[in-house]
Image 1 (cartoon, rainbow, N blue to C red):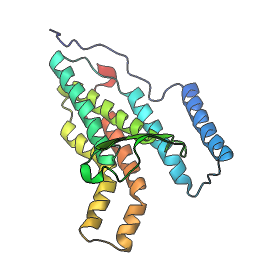
Image 2: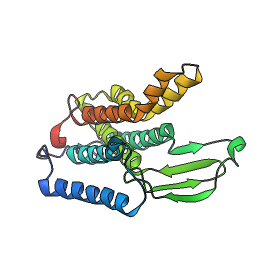
Image 3: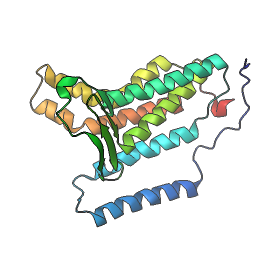
Image 4: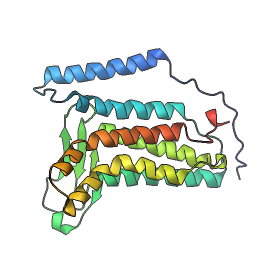
Length: 227
């Protein structure tokens, strides 16, 4: 049985190598330029072009910045379960995964679907069956995988008194806000106020995602480099 010996690791620098970061941003910029040059798509609001890359880059940076500490077998299993379960919950709340009843069985196209949407939003890949669907939206998947990894690291680091319960609520805001907007509409709160909130749902969910990532990366008691 593992004793959970902690590895001694040098703290990571605050920022990754500039060449790596510059290369990533260059690839993303070329991807966007090529998309709008080769397709009839036009930019209606620049923030909707940028937001997916905010999610992707913040998620990649957080995964690079945080490294798991050593842990015993029991804590590793708990971390694996928490991380996987958390990703599934986020995917379900955001609609990437869904299971539905027979009343909806014939309301949509079935099988594999591919949509070459704006970079970050796409390319979208989906599989739709009679009882369930699975959607792949790049920025959402990368963002939720990053959050799941960060929770996995936090659970492995429980000996540092991490506030995983509070963090779970904070990170869930980013994916559940559009659901809350729909809920408000369902109970009869409509009009211009709700419309304005709905229009800002991506702005608010992006802000919540960044706050959640920041709290996970710089959470109180986190041990730098897993030491």
